[in-house]
Length: 288
Image 1 (cartoon, rainbow, N blue to C red):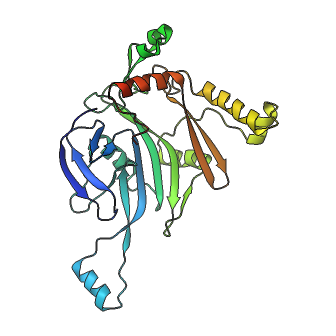
Image 2 (image 1 turned 60 degrees about the vertical axis):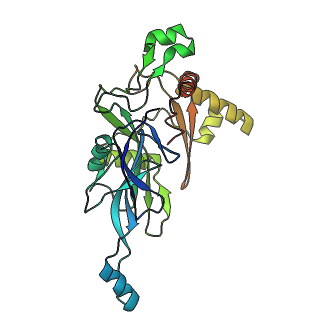
Image 3 (image 1 turned 90 degrees about the vertical axis):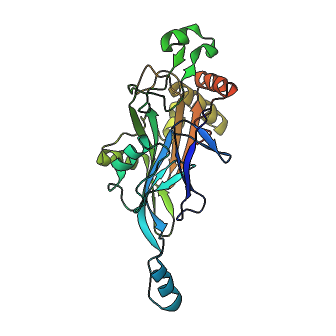
């Protein structure tokens, strides 16, 4: 865990429980009991409440003039902290380089109502890892340590000082606030249109085909076999970087408009992660 100095904290008027924090570092930190970190990111072109002028408030109160109460704007941040672009003050980020890079890429390119969800990987401009390196010796597997080194950074193919990101979800929200997720095929098509990367697809199959292939007749067998398959996909070197061991894998279940995602963490990652917690480091996923 790193201690940081909060340079400024500003209430976002358009979002009742969100604040814009500017700090002197990009590491994980606590602020008022809320953990903030830097791996997950979302960017949305969404409707937000407008800050009405004095004249507009008077017109609403004493006349029948219709005043627009909302406007389309780009929101940027994490699940914990949502940052809104300010037309007057510019943009403030608690990580001004990495998140601003993502923001500038999507600004002006998202359809109204679209929100993209992504993971930022690699390194900060200072060379520090966005996700803390893990001690592989805690696995007590000599072959594993020999292959990945005693300390394994989660580089995902990035050189020190560089970062990358991968989209794993895109949703759209209409003017009534109803949100629908894009199908996985539509996520991939939209990523191609935006010229950005999506998380690697390891395999896909219909539930009916899966059961027929493995001669499954009941739900219990289905669950057991599914756990075996996800464990196979969740181990080994990362698809994007063989020098980085996988954290695990996700199963994305689609049925009509319903999308559910389940994550599997492999034994090696969980063992190193548990050691990191014991030494006071932060679980990137749980804190997000």
